[in-house]
Amino acid sequence: MPRVVLVEDDPSVRDGVEMGLRRRGHEVLATATGEDGLAALDAFRPDLLLLDLMLPLMDGVEVCRRVRADSQLPIIMLTARGDDMDIVVGLEAGADDYVVKPARTEVIEARIRAVLRRIEAPAGVRPAVEHHGDLDIDRAGHTVLKSAEPVALAPSELKLLLFLSAAPGKVFSRQRLLEEVWDHSYHSDVRLVDACVRRLRIKIEDRSEDPRYIQTLRGFGYRFGPL
Image (cartoon, rainbow, N blue to C red; front, side, top):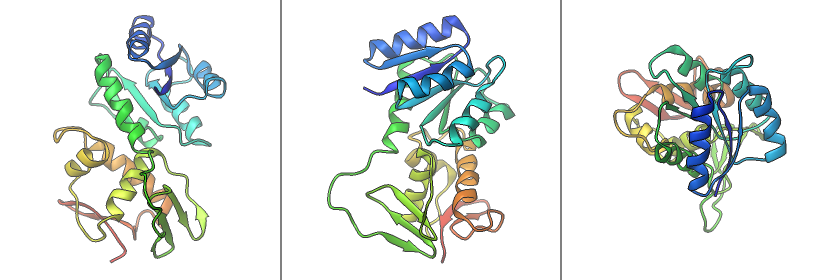
């Protein structure tokens, strides 16, 4: 089962989530501060970080930024607020998904499994690398090169790129992308898609404000180019 570092300052929430995940077979290291959470990543080597958004001193957004500075560890943010800009900031900082508290353990575990599925390489024969302009995509190996240099992508960024690039020129609505990439229902939060697109463009486009690969069709959704 996946190893999880949990960072949550509310003792009742922390104990409840930790106990629930342990009952389902997860190894969990729970901490109460962002500083302790960062230290736990090196000591525990988790498969995923479950991170509260509102923390004392170093908040969850700053923790997320520090992790993303040198790691593509999957991150799910916990937040008590489901409709404000803090969620957008957290997603922009590099979180792969978020869960609004209070949430049942089975909901959290489902999100954990969904995020981790995005980084599982498929079995079978390794196909040739796909070439799209100066972007090289190894679909089976889950590696991406831009101008022959490796591009470090978080799980949601990688799966979004793999999904869109599998059908160049085809337009996908944000709701469809939520279902295919995030395993979310039709009525889930499309901010997940928009934030991921912005992060991905920064990494693979020459000019993110004039994208060549991840193109927007206003009112319809996104498609992969160049066409």
